Amino acid sequence: MSDRARKLKFKTETKKILDIVINSLYSHPDIFLRELISNSSDALDKLRFLMLTSPELASERELRIDIIPDKDARTLTVRDNGTGMSDDQMATELGTIAHSGSRGFIEAMEMSDDEKTPELIGQFGVGFYSAFMVADKVEVLSRKSGSDEPGQRWSSTGHDTFSLRQEDNIPEGTSVILHLKEEMAEYLDNYRLRELVRKYSDFISYPVYIETGEEEEEEKGKPVNTRKPIWTRSEDEVKDEEYNEFYNHLSFDIQKPLSRLVFHAEGTTEFYSLLFLPSTRTMEMLMPDYKTGIRLYVKKVMIMEEADELLPRYLRFIKGVVESGDLPLNISRETLQENRTVKIIRKALTAKVLSWFSDMLENDPEQYHKFFMNFGDLLKEGIYSDVQHRENLAELLMVWTSKSGDEQKSFRRFVEDLPEDVDRIFYITGSDRKELASSPYLESVGKADVEVLLFDSPVDEFMLQSLGEYKGKKLVSLLREVDIEDLTEEEKAEKKNAEETYAGLLEYIKDQLGDRVEAVRFSPRLKDSPCILVGDKNDPGEMFRQMMKTMNQEIPEAKKILELNPAHPVISMLQELYDKERSGDKLKSYVNILFDLGQIMAGGRPGDPVTFGKRITDLLSGT
Ligand code: ADP
Image 1 (cartoon, rainbow, N blue to C red):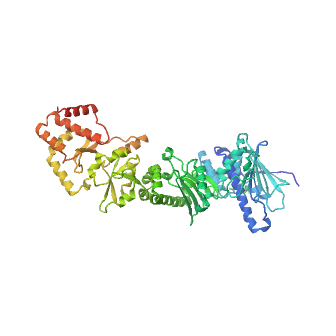
Image 2 (cartoon, rainbow, N blue to C red; image 1 turned 120 degrees about the horizontal axis):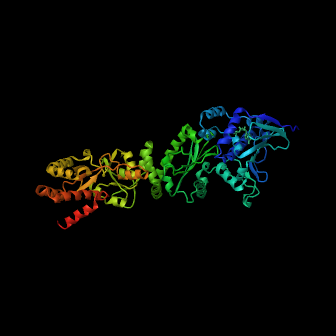
Image 3 (tube, helix red, strand yellow; image 1 turned 90 degrees about the horizontal axis):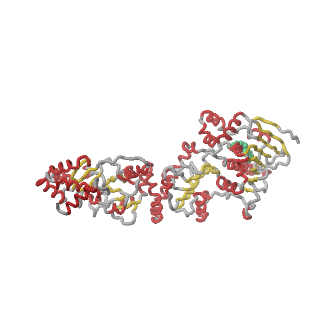
């Protein structure tokens, strides 16, 4: 047996990639283990396939992957009994980048700025070479399975050259021995290795064993990974507890999930998915930059922990796993966006998720209530951000109404129950539902008979304006001025009549209030109150202003319109004063009180509380 080592140079391209990997992937050293395990798994796959076609290779031995840390030598070995590599293969496969994408990779590298390099590496996949992130020397012992040739030892420090030497006693398969850098000693730790295998390679279909000598008694001789992905198993085969445990492991949430969805899509694109709804929400989930909780697996290898392209942003509270064999293993966060298959998955998954919600609404209202209480605001976010599903999302809304009491109603039901000739849905928005239920704004449509929607979440105003209408019925805010078009013929006549009768008074009031109001008008929609302050048609509304304020954006206050009730005795009393003593202080004082009343009823406060107080006192004492 020759003990002469051959010294070979890396191909220039390989050398370049090596440098890039070593220098730019520093922030993600963990991935080396998943890359090596994935290579081993591929080699085992190949052998398994060969065993089917070449019976002489078939044996009883267990196809497996072993991870062997050696603290004294500071080496970590990843061993498999897969196909192994022949002499030639070791020189070529590990000396060049065999990858068909390598040329493209080099070109892209040369054109890109430094920041992009980690993504590019992910995109093209340079698996084996990631070993040099954690090791300053890598040795590979390999022998082709079923071959009579002796095996070889490949060795390199990741610089210009590598050496190859034939050796006896190399077992079939491949061992990658990493001489860890001093600062990478954590990868010798039993606990750390288990964590990494469970996190990234749990569902590799071959057993992965870790032998440290430190493992607990019950762990000895047992694979670390569970191998059979829970998401590919049929739902009636898996116990609730197993799903729940998986959810806990996945989400770091200690509670049970509220609901789960097991969905296997077949057709042009095949994928498995297992999704969960948390039973409570955290404040972070509402934040737009909250990381989505969907893990992406390709061919049983975990590719991304937070694959945010698989569902729209507003569904970011969903946790789970998606696996597809139709995606390339080296897909990256960057390429995810443009990938056609990802788009297909996203579309199918979104539709499925929305019907999961509507089934829940239909079949388990109690559970749906809980769900909506926690995540309703995010569905509303979907209404303004996802035009395509706007209608479906609107169907999922739960609403308070002026008649709903303490129970929310399904918006869809509410609309279905409206008489057919009703073409408008009225609503008011505010910060307190209880206050809204007795708001003076309700009377403008007749408190008793018309059911008005009450919205009390900061996102509602914006959501309603994006929605605009539902099933052909227009959504109308009672906090805004009446659209003349929306008045009945009778009301129009009433308005015109009042404008004539009280023309002088109207001018006087406008004069008095000056630029405190945008306009003063008669509004026949009022019933009990003498007046009301409303926004103009384009006013984004108070709730919207508040929401923007929390995002540090000030929307300037808009002047309000004062609507007067022509049928109210206060108006005829003012008219009398106007006729008799319009130059006195009384009329002026009353008009100001009226305006301040409007402010108070709108949930605000008088512009000058002291003067307001004095005017009321005068009024009470009859002076
Ligand atoms: P990729 O796996 O994307 O092809 P790598 O750089 O990870 O790229 O590996 C290069 C090649 O080396 C592989 O294609 C394979 O032929 C060979 N190889 C790597 N690891 C093993 C292994 N454990 N057993 C057999 N062959 C291997």
